[in-house]
Image (cartoon, rainbow, N blue to C red; front, side, top):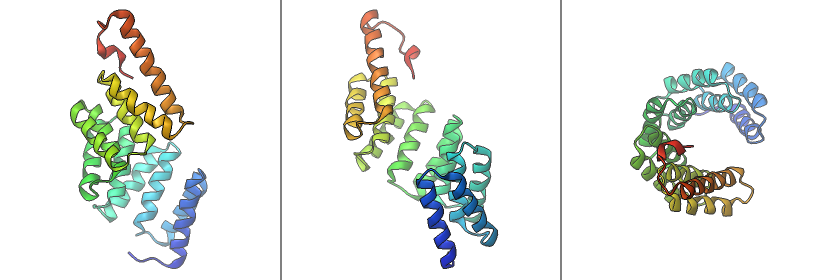
Length: 207
């Protein structure tokens, strides 16, 4: 859909504010766009994204559902809906939404990252790791992908694989607290196993 130059400028402004973590200001602009252009799918998608960033999942769901009513094949709206459901640990519905996003926009590393994480947590561990590996192959320098993949390896007791990807994530982003925390948890797990002679039940060590 084509929009007036003023709408495009407002969308760009909202995107810039979001990138600066000024989500409330972005929300105000997006709501103004919707009042004048109620069919603006991008405004609803961005509104949902900003509501997620400000921990308002109910409002995010409302905005994203409207985006999907306007365009049922919006991969971004399906992705954001799946991400929101993942945050709520509703793994079954999260996988459904993220699968739709992947079907519409295949080989998108961020969609595959979230889909892999949701599939893994839905107790399809081998498939989840495989999806995360595909995501890593598409975007090998993304620390978030590496950390998610490492956590899945760690929870599957594949410690060597976990350490490799955690170390790579930390090398890519030396300031990453997530990578440092993951390495600390992994080292604690390995230390516990060494003390117990490797006989402990791995299910007690999931993070």
